[in-house]
Image 1 (spheres, rainbow, N blue to C red):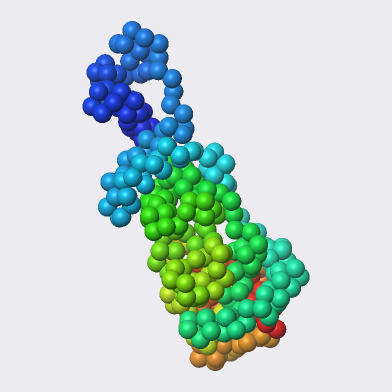
Image 2: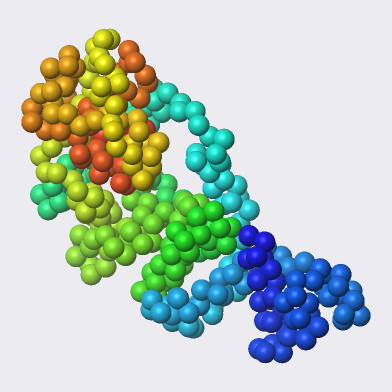
Length: 370
């Protein structure tokens, strides 16, 4: 980060002095790594003011201009946008508060409180009401994508309360801040540039609002996901995930299909795990390079028939076929409700890599249509 700031300061000196007109003493002082006091003495003038975070952010973003132009962003749009960007300390605080942002985070909380707050009476009731209204649309999307209507609706409910809240962070400022801050620079630099592509294609900046991390619209897609998977389902010629429910729901279905959703297979089923089960014997031998904490909580793959042989009892709901592979998770520990999870559960994890999220999406969807 120190080298980035030094480079940003150098860029600011060059920019404010005019192209190629940086004062030689100040330029050489920066190149030689001298302290600010040394540069001031060389100029026989007071020390230059420390650049603001806004200025440093803009200097960093200015270095992305060639990449932006290469992917189709007009120079005029880039140059007009650059001076409007601002650093958001709040976005940085929110990012650093995320699980995994600090190596000190290790404890896994119980699932039950999360379930109670995310698959609650209000969310189920709203889901059932929206299901009644959207049923013809959902059935059509299910036929096209193979994704069950209740799963699409449950994701819609989880992400934005069925469209009632979509976030009010300015995407460009949020993504520019996260790219500049640097914890996940490659990810957020790419998303910032893809947001400029959206603007180049006619999406107004005023519409590009969302979460602090850059997710936007009813499905809370990142800009790169929108460009790759958003669908025009209402026939107006453009995928509009901000105002069109048909486009948003079809885009969710398209996302899950792209993530490998298997038609006519439930996401999973609640189960009772016998006390004497040998958990060491069912531990997965695999280590996932993506979201390792999430996948480490799931067992090895066995067929539903093999799980029955181990004494697992199904607790209702739609049970996968006997030859379907499933893994076991016990999110509240031994003696509590467990879940057998099919490959379709992994598709939900692709949407949001959290066991709590994926479980609550499946359970909310089941509750909406039961």
